[in-house]
Image (cartoon, rainbow, N blue to C red; front, side):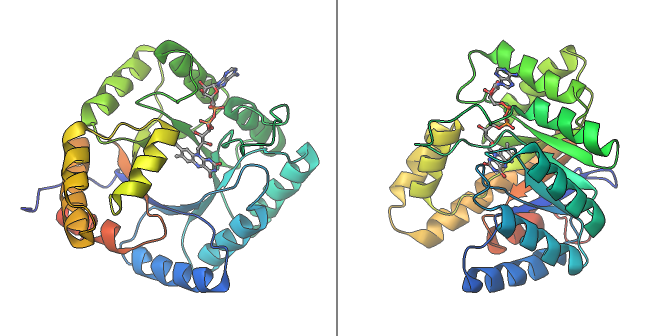
Length: 287
Ligand code: FAD
């Protein structure tokens, strides 16, 4: 594609999300991916957290490694099945480490647990963090321009998003989407409700159709029909999928920045290649 002139400025905020590695080989790969993406000078990295505490130690150690390597990093956090004392201990641990940003979530409830009582809604977690750590953390929360898959309605999802903001969230990162209009429409509805925090689009690079289709049906992200048709048509041709994916997602990012989005948060899936290519297409290399 031709290189668009990205409309980013000094205030535009860029971040890259990782998930904790489960093996030593994965950890080594993550260190290398972090090293490469750190060269792009993002504002911060973030590391996901398995609800139910399944990745609590993995998240903590990945956060520590990224922090020690000199990058700003935000752990994702949710109550999951943890006790209040465990979450307070983790918050204090992060504070002592020098971490000052969190992504606060309810988290996805692992299937088959049958338990929901200890799965605090994200607004309750934000209130909890504020109660126990005051203003120490800059708190990001999640939001859903195409609406959370379990929401009763568009209005109720907006209502619950506002509760997270009222509880003290400083910023929001969206679920990924491929339709820029859904984002802009959502931002306007949020503004109508008096929500004034930055709402940063979450960007999912496209590298594999089967995985993308599975994730998207779970999280309620719409893959436009023309994108789906094109990806399906490439079959096993990974190079064409990658090339098309980079082009489509670069154009999406460009439209978002052009339309005034306050930044971009990339779901890197622990890969540096697609994000670096999109970054280059956006003309952000000199940032
Ligand atoms: P909430 O804001 O609590 O909302 C959950 C659902 O409940 C919504 O349908 C909402 O409308 C409704 N709701 C909210 N509050 C109330 C209330 N008080 N009463 C009744 N209904 C309510 N998952 C992970 O497991 N680990 C991660 O690290 C992770 N990182 C993510 C990062 C981002 C940027 C995003 C967008 C998602 C992430 N997720 C992660 C997925 C997320 O945990 C799921 O989408 C989860 O189902 C909802 O989390 P939430 O924080 O948005 O929940």
